[in-house]
Every structure is written in C-alpha cells, then in structure tokens.
Image (cartoon, rainbow, N blue to C red; front, top):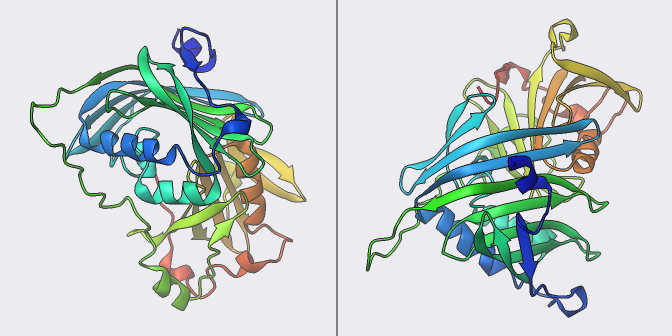
Length: 333
C-alpha cells in the first residue's frame, strides 16, 4: 500500500487540479516563495509522520520507511527502516531530507532552474499547493506538493533528463503540532544550513585544487577536512546532492563485500546497491568515494568528471602535498 502511495500516481494518492498550462507559465519563479514558506514551516513547526522514500536506478530500485519527528529548537530525529538506524538532523540542511530545504539550497535552485506555481492538489490526504521545477528547455526536473495548512513539503518527485521519475519522497501520514493561540512561530537558526566553505583558503594553500562545479549544474557548497582527516566535498544543484570523499592510498578490492565492479571508459568503479548511488574507486594514489542523492544520469556525469586512472585533468593534482592530512573514516558512521 505504501509503495502504491509513492509510485502509483493514482487519483487516491496524488490528485492535481488547476495546473498552469506550460504556455501560460510565467518566466519568473512564481513558486519559489511557496518553497520558502514550506521551508520555514518545516523548521518552525513541530510535526511527526511517516515518509516513504524510493529511488530508481539502472539495475532496480531501493526503498526505505522513515519515521520523522521535528521539534523546533531541537531539530529532527529520523528512524529508518529496514536499517533500524536513528539519526538527528537539522531540517534545513541536505541531511534534513525533502521537508525543509535551506535558503542556500533554494538560492542554488533558483540559479539553476525556474520554479513555478502549478495549481493545487492533494498528497497524504491533505490539500496541497503544487510547484514545478523546470529546466531551461521547459522539461520538469522536480515536482513538490506543499501542505496548505502551514506545514512542510508533503511530497517531492525528481525526474531525470528523459522525464522518468527516479526519486520520490512522500509523507504517507503527517500530524502537525497545534500552534498556541496568539503565538508567533520562530524559525530556529541554521547553524549548518549555509555554505560551508570557510576552510577553502587553507585547502587551496595546502595544494588542493577544488573545482567550484561538476557537470549537471552541481555547485560546490561544502569543502572541509573532517576531524579524522579525510576531505569532504559537497555539490548540489538545489535539488540533488553529490558528496565526494577523498583519502590517500590504494583500494583493497578483496574486502569490498557487497560491491560489484563495472568497467567504464577503461577504468574500474565499484558500486553498491541497485541504484548506483554509492561508488568507490582509486586513482592517482587516492581513493574516491561518492555518495549521492541524485538521478543516475547526473551521478554518472559527475563521477566521470572526477579523476580516474589514465584520465589526466585538473583533478589528478587533487591532494598533492596534503596526503598526510587525510585518513579514512566512514562518513556516515
């Protein structure tokens, strides 16, 4: 039943009406303010609910059920099944999921896409405002269903360049905390919701050459050395996130249980899972690991732009003179 709510697109799961015809859509971002309002609600309003997330790739799909609880001033707690993991997240950061995009992510979104209001509909059994995110050629890159009762994003769909839905996150039930009469909701500050590029001058001085963008309109929003030493680079187009982790050394392929190897353009990439969102490979004395929340075609082009053996480019110089600063840790551990 949950899968049908997310993937089926039936009249009972998602109903739309009064949609703006493409030839009548304004040339300005008529829907951006709706996403901003939802983002504020997603941080300032308490709520709890169940989200179902499905991602499709070339070899299949993967799904997860998330039990979400947001408490203003304390943040969001996410309990994931089937993994059983529990984590805390600032709802205004990429780690916060679909419910409340940060202002930085919305600024990136506005630079890369046109965001237009697209009428009204229903999701999760609740009235919703619809927002379409359009590419330069007018095709739809994403669709949002925003709760009309001053709540968060109810549903988000990402489409690839062929128009196929490749990523869906949706509430299947949602309970909003009551707002006290006369109370003025306050928006918690986003301690980590903006650009995380403070370390860039030090990284550049240490010899790192870090591109500001990857193919697919992916802009650099984070570049830092973790306390354990590995280099983290975060890229986003406002909708998707591609995270790159770099460490010096060689890849011990014999211990990559659960990963399978693919040959691409003469080099080997190890991939985990059916949707191609986790990849690892070695090049130029470094090991590169990519974790992505993005359509497969975007991930493939981004990975192809990263360094690989026999592909000399700017990235092959990444980390020279700075290898002693890095050591490997599980970035999500």
